[in-house]
Image (tube, rainbow, N blue to C red; front, side):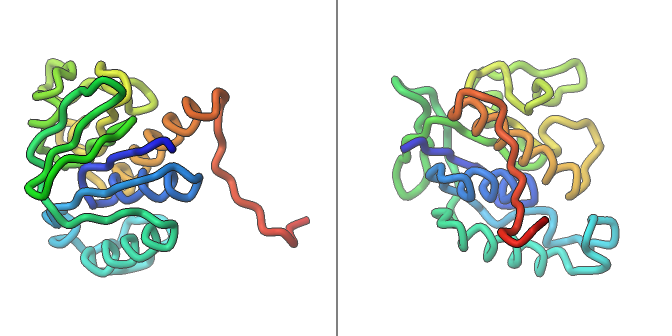
Length: 184
């Protein structure tokens, strides 16, 4: 089974995990629980009139857990290319993955260690699908935007990364669009 490793448990990481797990890809989230959302209050997130950032993260974690995400509260100490994908190293051991989504806020060190390209503004250079110059590695949110840090933007970046992974796995453009059985 295809395995996606998501490094970071804020809006970008949890959004990527939601899309991949919901669509039957094995997904592990590695979260040091240092998201800026713990300092935020949301008034500008579509669909949420007002919510504490920590409550939002807790709701999002519960949602991804419902789709079978393997959530690990641990710090990632390194990511390296392996024979058939990537190795994610933590204090607790190593995990092999086919894809990696980096959602570590403004900490760009893992992308740098992997040899990803950076822009002149010292942010990770990605394509429209959030893929870095390292095939199979995606960067999201504050990693790819100079001073444009918003939860809703980050969540969109995570979703774009996940949809690109799903499209690659299915061999065609993938659209995650749910329709209730009783919809006309």
